Each structure stands twice: as C-alpha cells, then as structure tokens.
Length: 226
Length: 226
DNA sequence: ATGATAAAAATAAAGATATTATAAAGAGGC
DNA sequence: GCCTCTTTATAATATCTTTATTTTTATCAT
Image 1 (cartoon, rainbow over the protein chains, first blue to last red):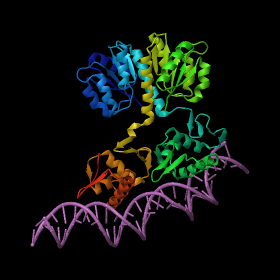
Image 2 (cartoon, rainbow over the protein chains, first blue to last red; image 1 turned 180 degrees about the vertical axis):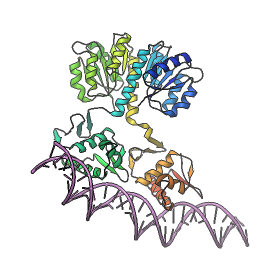
Image 3 (cartoon, each protein chain N blue to C red; image 1 turned 120 degrees about the vertical axis):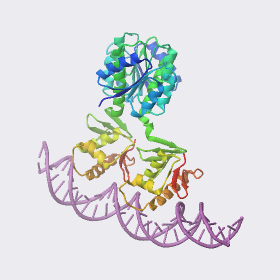
Image 4 (cartoon, each protein chain N blue to C red; image 1 turned 180 degrees about the horizontal axis):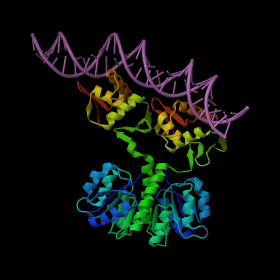
C-alpha cells in the first residue's frame, strides 16, 4: 500500500524536485501550490503532509491549524526561516517536525520515512506486551498472565484475544473477527466465534471473576474493554 | 494523567537539569545513567524517551534498537554529534526526533509536548468521537456519554442517533431514517421510528432533562439540534 | 376568535423476532 | 487418543415491531 504524501509549497521548482524524488521511492504525491489548494485536497486523506511556512495568502502556520481540525496525520514543516522561535511555533500549531531549508533530499526522505513508520507502528500497536486491566498479553510468546499465573489459551482463542486487545474499545462483528483471525479467504460459520468467546471468558473469569474483559454489544459484536 | 518520560544520559548534570525542568511541567520522570539501567526500567512503560547518543557501553543507537523491540513510544535523540549522517542514523534505528546539544530547554519541552500530543491524537482516535451538546458519541465503541455517565442504547437506537448526529440541523422523514438505518432493501413499517425516537428521547432526558436533542418537525420528520 | 375535525405524532404495552449463551456431540489434526 | 475446533440443538434474553389508544398540532369553517 503506497503512502500518500501532500506537498504544499508555492515554489514550483522545489515542489517538482521533491515530487520526483519521492515518487521514485514509491510514494503517491499530491501537490498544492497554496493553502487553499491544500485544503481542497484534504479529503483525499494524505498520510503525511510537507508544508512550507512562507506562502502568499494563508501561511503555513495558519494552514497547519486548519488542517488539524480535520486530519491527524504527521505534518512536516519546511522553511528557510530558522530561528528557534520559528521551529517552536511550528510544533505549537500542531506540526510534528521542522526541517531547515536548504535541506538534503536524503534527510527529507529519512524523516518522512521515520514519521510514516511511526504511524504504522501506532496503527499496528506493535507492542509486544500489552497490559490490559489485570492481564498481560505477550503477543510474541503467545502467553497471557494474570499476575504471576499463566492462563492457557488455545491458538484461536489467543488470536482472538490478540486482535481485540490491539483495538480496545472498538466493537467488531463476529464476521470481522472471523476474517481477521481465520483470514479473508476462509469460509466458515462465524457462530464459532460465539463459542470461542465463551471459552475465553470462562478461562479469564476463573482468575478474575469481577472484571469484564470482553463485552457483548447486542446486535453488533464484541469489544475489548480497555 | 501525567505522562511518564524516561531520560537516558550519562552526564548527571544534564539529566538533573532536564529532570527538574520537566517535573515542573508536571511530567513524571524516570532516570537512567546508562543503557542497562534504561532497559531495566522499560517495563514501567514510559510514554516518551529522551536518549543521549554517546554513552559508555551500549550507545544510544543500539539502545534505541533494543527498546524498539519492546516499546513503541516516541524516542528523542539528544546529541552533540550533529552531522546529517548522525541525524539520519538516529531516525533509521527507530528514533522519532533529533535535538542538537546544546539545546534550549524551551525547545526540548516543546518537542516533547508535540510528540506526546501526537501520541494522544493517535490513541484517542478523536475522529470517531462526535460531540453534540453535552453528549459524546463514540461510533467505534458504540457508546454514548453524558459527561461521565454512560447511556445505554440498543443497536437501532444507536444507529439512529449516529445518523442524525452526523447530519445536524437537517430534517429527515421517518422513511429516510428507516432507509438509512435498516437499509434500502428492508421493508417494514417506519412507524417503528416513532417508537425508537421516543425511547431515545426518554433515555437522554433522564440525564439531561432541559435540552432538546431531537426535535419533531411536524409533517416532515425529525432533526438533530446541533 | 373559537371550536370542530382530521392528520400526525406520542405513549404504552403486548406479541413477535432475532441474537447470544450454553451445552454437548461430532469432526479433524497431530 | 487427546486436544482443539466446529457444528448443532436448545435455552435464555434483549430487542424490535405492531397494535391500540391518547395526545398534540394544524386546518378550516363558522
């Protein structure tokens, strides 16, 4: 899946320069030569935005604040203005990074890469140990602990727990869970989820009878209580 | 909720300097004077890590890679080494930012704040939370809150609220609502909408008897007051 | 204006339906 | 053969829909 990057700068040469180079890396690029164009393209949901500060009309700072009303992706400022005050202001208005002009392409690329990787980490929640109430779920070792006791879950059970735990407070239908755990190309009856959930609940309840970990949202699905 | 920040640097003066200043800001601080200490404290799950590169024993780059096996929080490098190559390497091994020594406390604080804010944005998934007067509607968790109280809505009720909330101040006929919530191919009597609206109103009114959330437009339909 | 009338909406409660929980038996893999 | 997974049947609930009745609202004639 290609990441979408929006470049906002009134200097066409620099934009072209960045665009070509980033396209070589396999990114999909959206270009805007002023703030209004940028806002118009926002609905396309870029994964990252590179923003010049000095632009005619609405400047980069204002644009950034505006963008933040709608989108939470990383925003990198690029600017020739380079006092500490400028850098701080960039971060204050909602930016995530600040690169001085002139910059090397290599540094730009690396920073973009680092930011996207972090977004990816976040969406993946690649933590390998997740604490959830009184449980600790080790997604690599396939182990669940209640305090020092190890709870024994089967493969499917664990996969279900893992999936839910990684997206706490979000309701998933039986079908969604089935698809996630069994794979998109599996065909089978997702009523088996009900049964697995029951087993999971029973095992947890044995150690922690008071808390609810997986709750049923009637007519919708199941949800991990975070 | 205080954020937990871990400082890793072998220069004790600098650590103390940062620690005092960050504690003033209300952060909770963990201190490590070398990489081993840092790793030992990792299970305490800091929300952000500030990392010096040049340290005796395992250096900052190696430590960063090690940390990344376990934890996905933002890592800020702080270093006197300041070539482009150094900065890039920091990002490559999994860092999220690079601050040159000597740095101003103000810039350090601002960057820390910006990173934590981003984490917060990500974990909050604020896009799925709609604020409407005194209610907060969480479309992923299928939950509605009045201040801190959770209101219990059934599936259909929730879907109706969700639909109306997403188009505030716009009147929809019973048929339109029915079509939206039940699906275009459903056939049934949309008088059931009346009943559901009643239920919704009753539940909200229990907590907020003064405001009107859903108003009736006689002969036309219902409307969410935005 | 006023009151009668008709239409729409609100209410209440019972009946019907659908979803989930439970239990137990059967199938499949190592 | 044992463990896990899946299926099936049944029970328990929560939810949805319908119906009947009352109330509200708008319209219109007087």
